[in-house]
Image (cartoon, rainbow, N blue to C red; front, side, top):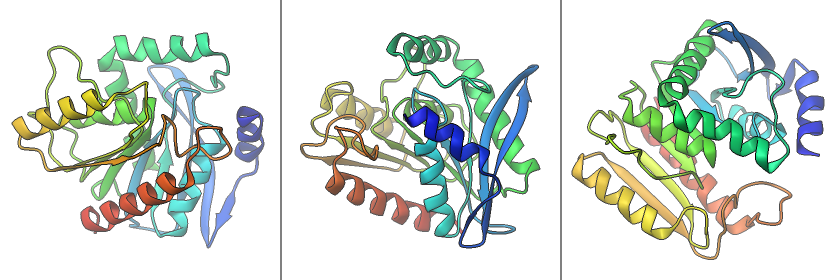
Length: 246
């Protein structure tokens, strides 16, 4: 259902949200087509790079992008899987995320190309943060470790483990982690380990843990959705944006 709604919403362009015009953007990375979603309330709006969950860019990310545009932010919801690749089966989701987890250079390159694509569409990437959901959260932390010149990195119920041989020594901006206390996919031990790594690297960070919230607690309409944790994490994220973006 999520993918069907996504296809419907993606076809309804341009999308208007309080004067912000949204559109699909097809772009190429190493000869392969990708399809993202860009929305902006106007020139020089603070910019957010959004990275999707493990089912690809769907209506969920588009809704969140539109919500942010209503608050005055330009958003590019990037595509890390490829145009038309929106997996619905568990095995396919694991395949596509697994391929990128094994090829970190490709993961980083896809996000950097997404930034350049957003810039070509008018985004001010010099005043930008990156954020992501679940798999997208893990990807955003990969971008943080790469030394990307952004003003902040935020994850909602994202993967937190650092690959062997990596650290946060190159991270150039604050990190915000929003985590469900009842998440059995990403544990509290993972949260504690990440906190130690960020402390060691002297990276400014904040970690919020929402008691009783399971993995994917922000996804509207799903059984695991928790309204209280969603609203609190969304408010915290908006304060993070106000603090770190001009």
